[in-house]
Every structure is written in structure tokens, then in C-alpha cells.
Image 1 (cartoon, helix red, strand yellow):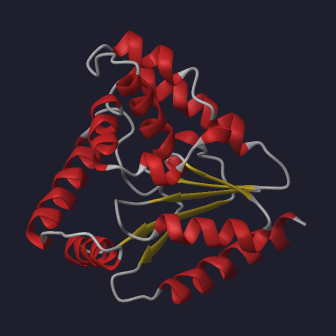
Image 2: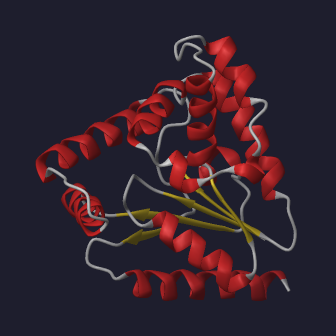
Length: 210
């Protein structure tokens, strides 16, 4: 059983994916972390972020078992990851690694930008989790403030819009819902409501596959 969850930044797909994986006893992979891990490795080695061959070589060596969300969530790593994520050779290398991960038993939950459309187009369950840019910016702002940090809502809102344009506008694997994906708009939906909706969809798929 492969569950593919796509959507823009701060829509809640990661939180939802982790809860689904825990509930069903499936393996979870935040595929965005694979790009961040590649970027961090390049930064740590003092290598350029604009050399596709070098970035591809690093992507081929990423250890999916050693992804540290806390470390990889740093802003500068995210910025570096956005630069290499548009490189076709890097995407090919990481997509192959993600597909291998998806074959783990008894099941997997992968979240990202192109899981249902590129990485696992045959996944029996595809969810596209979204929310308005305003709601997503507010969530990110509140998350930073609650963690004791300082944040500028307007700057975060502009950043969210820039990321959307970059993710949806790239020529290789643009962010978009798969044709057969279930759309979950969490703008006015709690994470609990989103989870219960997703769980009912997954339960139905599991019963069909039984």
C-alpha cells in the first residue's frame, strides 16, 4: 500500500502524513527532506549549488534513513534545496531513491510535491492537501512565534507565494494534483477533520485491496 500526499508548503501535508503512517504502521518519507539533505551535503562540503553534475553525485549518495528533520528545517538549507530541486538530474536521482523507499512493506506514506504525478503515479491512494496562501502563511508565522522565534507575517506570505510560483511553474515535475487525487482543502479544516477524511479514504482502499 502506497499513500501519496502532495501539496504546497505549509498546507499540513507533513503533519497529516506522519499521523497516517503512525496510525497504519506504515513507513513515512518526507521527500522534501531528500532535497534538503542533498543541499546540506553540498553546503557542508563547500561545493557549488549551481553545478548539476556535482549535485547529482551528492543526490545519489543520500541516506534516506538518516534524515534529521530538525537540522534540515533550517532556512538556509531550504534556500539551497530550492536551487538544486529544479535540476533534472538531481530530481531523477532522488525520485529513484524515493521509489525504492515506496516499496517497503507493509506500506508507505510519501509526502512532497510530485508523489502522485511522478514518483508513484500508480499509488492506490493519492491525496492533494492544500490551503489558501494567507492561511498557510499564518500557520507558519504562528509556528515560529510559538517556538519562541520572531517572524514577519508579510515576509512569510511573500515567501509562500514565491515558493508556490516556483513549485508550480518549473518545467520538470511541477506541483499539481494528480487527476485521480482526492482534494483536501484545509483552509477551514482542522488537522483532526483532515485526518478523519483521509483515514476513511485509506480504509476504503485497504478493503478493496484485501
